[in-house]
Image (cartoon, rainbow, N blue to C red; front, side, top):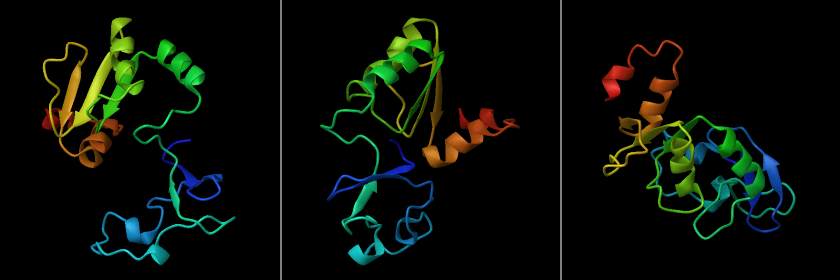
Length: 144
């Protein structure tokens, strides 16, 4: 699961969906803040509303053993637009830093004196992240 997956709020059907945005009404350039339920994405099986296949508060992440193995082998952690207070994800950066890996934070607010943060990129992540991930990242210095 992840941002390229949808989860039906009715029947629980999961489906890969790389569309960005998920529907036109949710596009970044959409100025319509009064979105009709009919304009939102619906399940192809039961017709209920779809939601992103991401973990929300009070939900248990899927595939924890697989995630733990990935974290164990990682040498870089990107912390993107989060306060890093919800477990288990809050522990991934410190775990990676504790074994010599680097942690890069992308957020509007700077973390408070966190020794595990090696790089901080201030600003909206939809702006900072693409700049840092560019192949010719000559402009990375502009973000600090």
